[in-house]
Length: 508
Image (cartoon, rainbow, N blue to C red):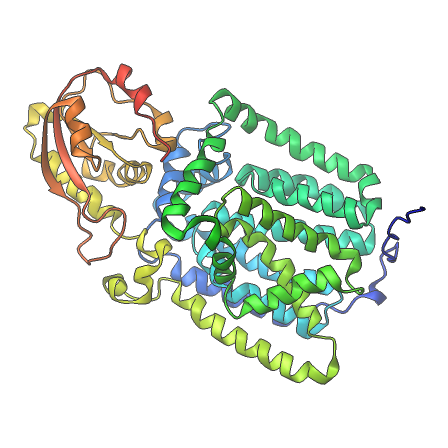
């Protein structure tokens, strides 16, 4: 029996602006500008997030890769801190600007999909008020850049589908290369998109030399970081099991993956996103772009099966919001109700997103909804941690201070002491945890050890004397990873650090 291949989507082959709506530049710019202003005004509040402290510390140890990410953010954070020492607002400025640019790109995607002015504005608005976008946009962390890069790649692809301009494919090279230097997750999206194109078209994309030239650029730029991973035993792959175990303990694992992802996108924006996915998969009008719908399903399935974190799929949200906004243009009889619903969704999500930002006094965080916000609570208490360790250090006799070292149980705590310790005349801090282990072991001639955190029984196995000398308290009752952490005075190390350190490395 003869089988017919699905017909290629019918599209214009040249750039014809008559086939596309004008860009709603002014309202979209206002939305992006307000988003940037809100993020800018709140970017200096509270303090560094734990990952930001780690990036600042890691950037002092330049490498082609790190245990938990490629080199882009550590090097960027170190460069910004070199230019603007200790300036939290300037450190987060790239996150602010890229998040605002993401809102514009989301509107541009809607335009490429045939969205008129209102659809473009709604797309930008959905991006700007999504809780996950706003919370990420407040911090210089890898998910912030992920959302921007995935949105940029989506726009380049949908614009190429309409215009067939291979210069857009060439831009995919540096965009994908930078995205891969931020996090390898984008590789899943790129492969899923190519599989979608192969399955449902437009298959002519796969025959474009520009596409494979862009792929070559992305691969070549990524090779050094992959070689670093290979040379160090693929710690990034080992982190997958660690992350899965953490999520199983905190959120219930795979069962909670999809509900949590939908919650992060922002209810009721979930309905707009689901409408966009349905539209991409089923609408004849958007059939040329349906590969992105299949890519969204494939990426979600991949991270669900591999026990990834729910926010790994956040980069898919913008193209789905854009497609959902375009779908509201159809069925004129229901248009008023649909746009009314969209306005309500926008208003509710705005309130939820604002609550996710540090808008309360830090002293009130423990008694507000932000007290349950991980990204907020973990920006509080780092100076107090350093103060507590400094007080314990000063209690040591002067002759013992000379050879004393500090070791912490987590890479965040070590990074915090790397940031705040020099101003308190503390010696360097070391940690066997995750990426900090690679930065070196304490010297063998060290004497007393102030161990921050850790298990007392395990410490007694390694030291002749272990005594609790302080307890960390942020002073405002905020429950986070530093509050209640013990500071131990450990003496009489049984094994030299050079022999002990290799076996202490822990990713969990």
